[in-house]
Amino acid sequence: MKTIYIHILNILAFIALIVFNLFAYLGMNFTPQNEPYIAEYTFLASFYFILALFYYLQLKQTSLKSLLVIIIVELLLLITWSYFGNTLLESLIE
Image 1 (cartoon, helix red, strand yellow):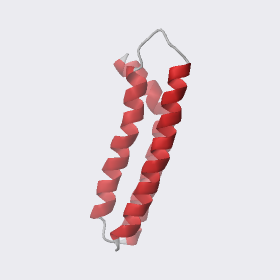
Image 2 (tube, helix red, strand yellow):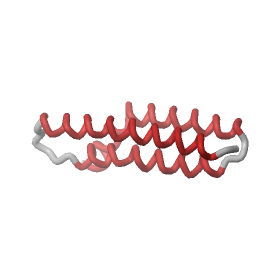
Image 3 (spheres, helix red, strand yellow):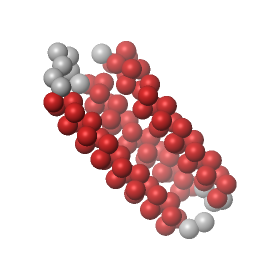
């Protein structure tokens, strides 16, 4: 399987993630809190870790079927993490 499609897909996901994180970072700067933003910054950085992990797994795949399964699992993990990750990190870190 050509890896150029995997690279293009992940570059587009990386650009979308940067835009999302910039808006989230700017939003956190306009809403001051009494506590530090340790969990929030860890939450935003965890998206890059998840994206990098699945990018590595996608490059190791040889068939289209396994690649599509990995992409679907990645999307489900990102959606689930975006809903519940911040609450989990708030309780663990702060």
